[in-house]
Every structure is written in C-alpha cells, then in structure tokens.
Amino acid sequence: MPDEEMLALWVDDELTGESAATVSAWAATQPEWLARREEARQIKQLLRAHLPASEEPPYADFFNSRISREIAREAVAAAPPAKAKGGFWRFFLPATAVAGMALCFWAGTRVVPARQAGPAAPVIVATAPEPAPALYIPEQGVTAAYFMSPAAHAEVIVLNGVASLPDSFELPDTASVEEPAPTTADITPPR
Amino acid sequence: MNRRRAITLIALGGAGMANAQTDPGRDVIGTVTVVVYLGTDGDATAAGPRAKPVPDEVAARLSREEKLKFASYLEIGRDMMPLYRTYENWAKPFGESNEVVLRFEAQSKLSKELMRMDVELWVSRKKILKTDAAMTPDKPLLVLGPEWRGGRLIISVELKPGKPKSK
Image (cartoon, rainbow over all chains, first blue to last red; front, side, top):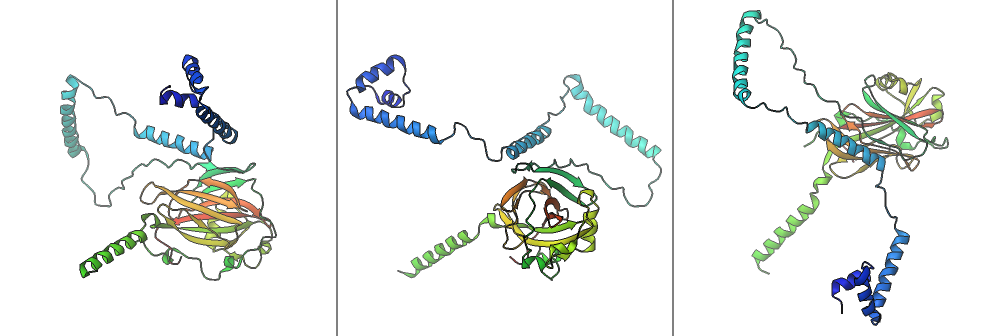
C-alpha cells in the first residue's frame, strides 16, 4: 500500500510518471480511494466553474495610485545621505569647520553694524506640498479634475458628465432650516 | 455566597462593562460639515421655497473661483456629522433623501492640522467619486457636481476639530 503522502497526491491528480502508475495500479482494486479521487475532481471542476482564475482588487485605480504615491514618498524619505569622506579628510574636515565658524564669527563682529531694535525676521520653514489626492471615478463617462484654488481658499474637484438630479426632486424640509448655520462657536472643543 | 466573593463578582462585571463601552475607534476626532449649494445663472426661484440664500462671504468666496462662478448661490442642504477615529460615517445633507450622500472615514493624520480622509460622493444611489483629500480646517473641499433645475450643485466638505454639539 502506498504511503499517505503519495495517496494524497494521487487523489489530487498531482502524481506523474511511474509513481502515478504504481499508485493507480494499487487503487484500481480500492473502490473507496477511487471514490475519493472522483470526489476531489468534482470539487475542482465546481470551483473552476464558479471562481475566476484571477481577480482585480476592488477600486484598482484608486489602490494603485495610492501605492505609487506612497512609494514616491518613501523614496524621498529614504534618500541616501552624502557619502562620508575617509582617510585624511575624516580628521581634517571637523577642524576646518571649527576654524571656519570662528572666522565667520570674527568677521561678523567686524562687518555687521550694531544691532537695531525691532522685530526679529520671521523664520520661514519650507514644507513640501502635499501630493494631489487620488481620484477614483467608477461611473462611465464621468471625468474629474482636481486643483487647489487660492482664490476660494479651497480644494476643488470639478466633475463633468454626472447625470443630472431629476427636476422632480424636491428639497426636504431639513434643507430650509431657519436657524443660522452651525459655526465653530457651536462646536465643543475636544477633551 | 459570602461577601468577599460577591464584591469580586461585582468588580469583575463592572470592569467588563466599562471595557465594552470604551471603544477607542469610536473616539470623535473631528466634525465634518457638508453643505450643498446650488450655483445658477438662471432663475434662482426654480429651486423652490426651501432653498435659502447664502451669506455674502460664501457667495464671494465661491465666485472668486472661475470654475465655480455663477450669478447666484443658494444653500439647499446641510449636515454635520462626527468623524470617528476608525469607523466610517455618512452625511446626508438632504435629510432622509439619498439623492446626495457622502461617506467619509479618517485615513491618516499628516500633521497637527492636516488630516487625510477618504471621501465618497454618492449621487442618486450611485458612487460618483472617491478621493483621499488632505483636509485642513477652514479649507473646504468643493465638488462641482451634477446639474439640477438649471444650476449645478456645489458640495462643500469641511473638517473642523472637536465634536458636534448635537448628534
């Protein structure tokens, strides 16, 4: 009798050549094992009939654009630092840097006029702009364009090709509330 | 049952209930306000008596952007909903009507004031747009959407810190 591993492979039609012939010869007189293999074949056929061979992830465009953006961001963050110089320069550079600083300080005391009273200059910190958001438009015929609008101080997405709301649509009562719209003063601060 | 055993059981039961009630994912980390405006170059009264005029500063802000420029603006819907730490939420600016619905969910916090949010716009029960806009307080996301009664809907989505007073 073949071992369990060989039998399992034979049931799954995974055996080939001499091994397959040997196990098949033994199983020819074993109706129980023949029935098992037949059952396994039927299940496989059923699965092939109902499951696609491959399936796209949901919202593939949205998903892919996000991955691309994150990869780009990681690449910027993981940029390799400048290669350190070795040998003589490794010891000489710190010394020259200190000497340079001292020289600049001395020169500054000589060249820059006396400090004037007044507000300090603002410190400007450059920040990388956030990348544009990913847009996913599932409806056929609809297009979307994103841009930042300094004039309206807003982010804007213009959709074109969207089916109109039916003219028969009536605004519900909730759209006509007479009270003033909630403002930041109406929002309780976070605890 | 002796007294010590009863106290232990009550303490354990209380701790279990408290744990069940404190779900960090339900923490409110902001408030999303959705306002639907109607921008029109035609007859503004076509929107009906329930539409109301917008404040001058809103009209001025919208008309400063060429793509959103219309002769008049009306507010036709509004909703304000909490943004949860991990759960999605829905805003329905037209009340029980599903003509315009927004689904939103926090995605990541980019800085103290910048929050990336998943936003989906559903019009007439169909998903029209999904985006992951980086939202800043007082800088709304304006979506120029479908036409209605001679004008176009402008859907404003704005994130503010804190939680809504009601809801």
